Length: 73
Image (tube, rainbow, N blue to C red; front, side, top):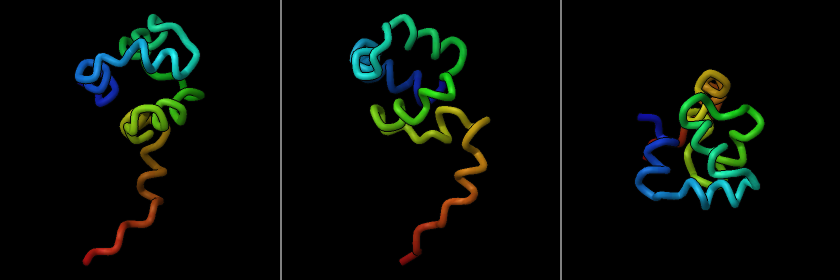
């Protein structure tokens, strides 16, 4: 189960997310069954807190490798 799907199941938030993004709840469920469109990843990350790398690792895996690591204390 993807982090996106888990978020929707635990929070029951498909309709809320759809309203936030200005799409139908059917569109949100379609993304669960297929994949999130590239142009929606950043908006979904902002609305859900799910990192873009988890939403579309095929697009953002590389970005995670380029981010500086937090300092270890």
